[in-house]
Length: 205
Image (cartoon, rainbow, N blue to C red; front, side, top):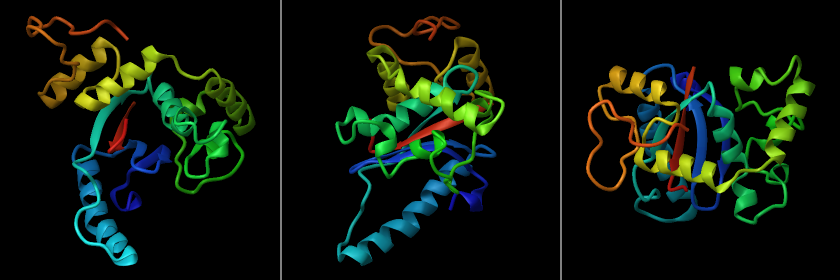
C-alpha cells in the first residue's frame, strides 16, 4: 500500500490497540489517500477473517509534520520505545512488531526505508547501528514525551519556530500548539522553542 503511493516508512510499531508510523510522503494528500485505501482494504479483510462487522478504527488517524533537522530521531526513538514504556518488553529489540531490530542492525526489514537523518549517524551500517543503539538506550524524559504527544494530538508541526512558520506559510493553516487562554498575538510563538517526515498515529498516544 505504501509502495503504491510512493511513501517511505522509516519507523513503526504495532501495539495491541494502536499503531505508530514515521513516514515521508512524496506530496501533500498522498498520506491521506494511502490511509483511506488502507481502511477500504484492511477492515473488510479483517472482518471476514474474524467473522465480525462494523468499523475497526475509533476515528480518523492523527498526524503531524516533523522537522527532520532536530526532531526526527527523537520521534524515531519515541515510536520504537513504545512497547518498553508499556511494560511489554524490557528492551526495544525484544518486541517483534516494530522496526527497532532493523534500526539496531539486527535484521533487515524490507518495509523500512532508512531516512537520511539516520544515515548521518555513521559512515557505515554498523557504525549507524551502534550510534542508534546508544541513542535508544538513553530513553526519553517526560518533557520530550509531552512535546511529541501534544503535537500529535493537535496535529501541529513538531519543530523549531522557523520550521513552524514555514509550514504555516506553505499550508496556510496553523502549525503551532494551541495553549489554554487567550490566543497569542499574530506572529507570537505559542510555546517555547523546543527534509520533513510525518508521524501518524491510529488510536495512539
